[in-house]
Image (tube, rainbow, N blue to C red; front, top):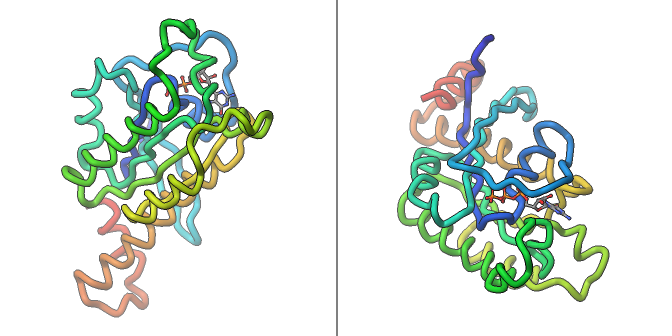
Length: 220
Ligand SMILES: Nc1nc2c(ncn2[C@@H]2O[C@H](COP(=O)(O)OP(=O)(O)OP(=O)(O)O)[C@@H](O)[C@H]2O)c(=O)[nH]1
């Protein structure tokens, strides 16, 4: 088996059952798994290559466990990450599929998942200054079915995203809506950031040397 060379480390963060694993599954394996919810233990890794202009960028995606029990471990996974996809639930129903009864999870409202997202944003801003943040409102299909279940206002999150210089998406792993777009944006931003780095730090006219400089930047 040949190991894949990873260009950019990406970390998935967010409250338990918010939909991180499903997002990765949809993006990497083009599928949505139905059946009993299985929480992630520790973290899972997958690599995926995609095209950005004339380049192939390989994202190494770390899917962390959302349970607060694993919080210290999640910190290990965001170290050195170039991008963090910080998930929150858009609808009141985001935990319906968790397999836990409503009474057991009465505290798990969507605003609590957004609070958890804010917690991760704060951590990243304090500890990982080169990590770009992508706020991701999950399970948008539930809202498309019934708008009254929306708990987190799109514009409120957009304002927050603008304030912190983050990108903001609303996705559905069930329908696939906006899933490719999130990861494509991560790869595009990484790619343009790498080129900016070459221009600013090395102060060169890229010209014919663009490819080799780009490679250096990506893999250093
Ligand atoms: N309707 C709908 N359900 C979803 C969607 N994404 C995830 N789910 C369901 O939500 C539950 C939790 O999803 P996961 O992807 O396992 O959540 P997670 O954030 O990885 O959870 P942890 O591993 O505990 O951190 C599962 O039952 C999924 O089927 C979605 O886009 N739409």
